[in-house]
Each structure stands twice: as C-alpha cells, then as structure tokens.
Image (cartoon, rainbow, N blue to C red; front, side, top):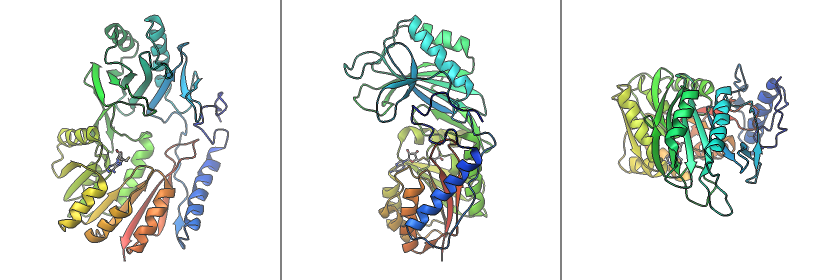
Length: 379
Ligand code: SAH
C-alpha cells in the first residue's frame, strides 16, 4: 500500500493508511448507522462498490501558492498552504503540470495573491483532465483581468504538455473562499475540453460540475439506469443534472428527457452536449430544481421517471411535495452525502415512496465521502 508522505496535513485523506477493503466496510457501516439513526428499518445496504485502483482518481485538482512559489492544498480550516510534491489522489501528469506552472510563475515573477492585503495576481490554479480523451484544461484564477506575459506562459506550458488543450483565466476579485469567479477569458484553445463518458462525448468548461472520478461515475450511472429498467416510452426528468450526463445516458432508453440545473454554464454545456451527440429527445432548463418541480406540478405534467442527484445539502421538502403531485412511478436518488439523503428518504417515505436497498459507491477512496444510489417506487 502506498502511503502519502504529508501525514494528512491537508485534511483531504481521512483514511490514508487504512487498508482499502476496510475503507469499503467503514463506508457501508456508516450508511447502516445513518438508516438506524433515522429509524428507517428493514433495509439492505449493499457492500460498497470499490474501485480496482484507489489511487490517482481525481480528474480535477485545485492548488494555492505561497509567496515562495510553493503550491499545495490549504491546511484544514485555514488558508495556510501545505506544500506537496506528489498527491496520491492526483494523476501524475496533473502534479507535473502544476510543478511546471510554479516554475514558470517564478521565472516570469508572476505575483501571488495575498489574502490579507488583497494584492497580487494568482489565487489558485485548477487542472481538469478528461481522462478518456487525454485532454487537459488549465485554469488560472486571478485577482485581475490581465495577466501580463500570458502568451509566453501559455506557449511554454503547452510546449511542455501537449495534452493541454485550453488555458482559461478566471477572474475572482471577491473576498471569498469560493475558488472561481464569474468572469472568464480564454487565453488559449476553446475554453473547454471534451471527455467521453458511457459512450457520449461531453464538453466541459471551467465552471461546470463534472464528476471527479470518471470510472466510478460510469458505474454509478449504469447502476442508476439499470435500476430504472427503462422501456423506451418514458418521460424522464433529470433534476440537478449538471452538464446533462446522466440524462443523456438515459435518453437512449427513454422517450423524452427533461434536465434541470441551476448553474448557467452547466446548462450551456448540457445543450451543446446534446447537439454534439445528436441527441434530440432531451431539453434543458436553467432553474432551481424545486421551483421547476413546483411549476411542473402546477401544470400537472406527465412524468414517469425522476432522477435526482442533488448537491451535498440534499433536496428540499418542497421538491418532494411537488414530486407527490407529479407521481412518477420510479425515482432514482443519487447522493453525494447520505446523511441528507436519509433525511429526504424519510420525506419520500411519508408520501408513499419506498426503497429496499441502498447501494454505496466509493467515488472518493481514502476520504470519508461516499456516494449512494437507491431506487424508490410508489406502493
Ligand atoms: N447529475 C450531475 C450533477 C450532480 S452534482 C452529474 O452527475 O454530473 C449536483 C448539481 O446540482 C450541480 O451541477 C449543481 O450546480 C446543481 N444544483 C445545486 N443546487 C441546485 C438547485 N437548487 N437547483 C438545481 N440544480 C442545483
């Protein structure tokens, strides 16, 4: 077993040092305890679906720099940079690119942002990898719109790493710990990379959500679609749809899919992705998922199947009240935080939707996080 040299200083890997099969067991037990605590009885928690290689899975990394041009993650609950050379969750090429970027910043004397004085240019660097197509995106998060010397910087970094297909300058002038700002300027390439997932190509831009662990994401989507047993005549709603990934996979087996997502960049990508893949039976709407559900309920629209994949905060009671009116026959709930999912499962239980089995998936080996999938049907 490889062990990280940085002794959990960054706060990222709670289970570094724990044997992998044990990690899977811990995650299953966690789900069992959550159900017990919520008094949800007589349910099965399946063994956690693990990965063949628990290392190097993160396709997105974000680092900060200190004024010595060292880079790393922030120490837990602080903004102190913990410098690292090699993170065992990153692909090696991502760390090599960051290393080169740090050397170029030093060479060109690019200033590093100082939070206290709110001065300096570079706040973060984000690397995103499309692992299936081997394309890389570099995002420089800056405190200003202008990066003097960006041409030379781009030329050098692209020459060193030809998989870099685009370099984006993201402007974030706000006093916030949110990494990305709203405004963007493409310094090189098209501003997006393309990855392949479940046989579909997806354009991914800097700001849209894309699952971190490609291979495990495929497993989760396949499970969700299998559980739904689509026949081809269903109307499916994909709520919290991101760039439309799962909905587009489902669209091949359904009559019509409607995707809803709050983030406007993700919806923009989703629409383009449908076009790029010649998928014509899917529409996307940029809206709050709860409000969208309420509007659908008011219009008494027909919905056969509902997919929900909310952020960690989970869904809302109002969303579930609207679901009650829409009466889909099947609901698949994918969650990145089972504690909020269990809360929502209780609401769903109260309106007559029941599940038998919760399927945990290890999307983030070595961390405490676990994803879960479950199918709910109306009795
Ligand atoms: N299903 C997608 C994304 C899941 S992540 C995938 O598998 O890739 C959760 C998504 O919910 C994010 O894209 C986030 O932008 C979106 N989101 C967060 N709050 C939302 C809300 N209130 N209404 C709609 N979408 C929301």
